Image (cartoon, rainbow, N blue to C red; front, top):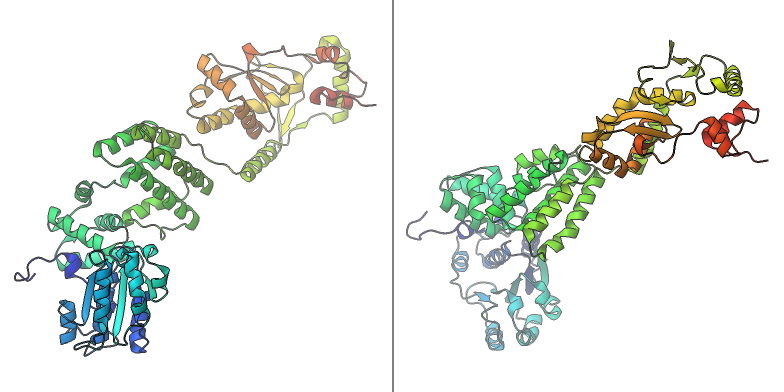
Length: 564
């Protein structure tokens, strides 16, 4: 640093002097260079775009390139008298005007009168009007004729951050160039070069924090860099930068995502307290949370982190979520957060509102597509029917034996059940639960299947509903099977309430696991007493012994009615 000139901020010290040094605006600099090389130079240009992206800098380089004595490939040499005088703002042929402080009609009249004079030394007389949208309506109207037909040696360059306030009559008389926001990676690369030039140690995470805070404005990023270096010295670390700029640490978003996956409701209040204690803005947190889940969605869809603007350490973390969520899960979460974002802005207690929003978020259940549900049901049905369970006797003899036992009232309810063949092994019905489970003979195969898969059923329910049903599933005992009713016993009153509340879910789950729809009811509170075949025939005349064992069995099992 030159002690005679004193300290220069990075935005001025590293300001580009050539088109090739302007970053992120190659589509504009290349066009201007070609215009100079081909001698197709317009008389008026309009540079529009966000703050700090190089509008005024590009205008100055263009003015130097037009008047340079020794241009090289349409680039200014920055060594000749014209380049130096324009660079130091001492040339009479280079006039830079602030539109905010020279917005009246009198200033525009003075400008209009000076336009007629030829340049003193250079080839062109260049006028740069910064923040041109600040001019009054009368000033624009007074300037229209001059702008439309200026002298050949005069060029106007207008720069503005709000092109919508510029009259269309002005825009139509100019060549318009739209400057882009500078990408985060471009800002990080430039800051890395500046840090290296100033012997400052800074990591990728800190550079990302500064670049994201700048929001696409290179000048803002350079100003933040100077501020950080002034505070931290030659060694800059991310934790200090986060505290100094009072930024929200991205780690808190990953902490919340892990709480969602683990259904950890306690973390919601820890995260909210952390936000409140650090003085972080709740609305900024919500915006960051939406961006966070958007990043997860890009990872799920593209299976890469290329579309994520974040530090490398966080990009690796995002990749770990690629198989933790589905697209439907993230879309539901984003829709939920978007709906609540506006409500948060007008909430009287934003801390309480955040706690409610995050609690709902953590309580979200995973989404399952209907096609997947159907496929699981089909697989469950096929697997339940693949046990090769057959009767030892042929069907005719089996039904005949049933008919014979039915005619004998003493043997109606206690006939010997058939043996079961599974694969190549002959297995007798399981008698382990015979003392604790009331099983009618026609439900023997059902209870056998239920007992074999009961552990799978309770484990599956506990995993999916571990908060509401999980604590009670190990207490659940089979009491009786009667048709499509599966009577269970549980001692806990809370468990009884949970079973009643989730009865529809348990019925669907039973169909998945057992391959048959069972209605789980609490045995001691059942509405009606299980009835036998004799009671059924007495109460419902449509179900009676017709003499045909096949017809009787269908009518009994399916509650059918014979139509004549």
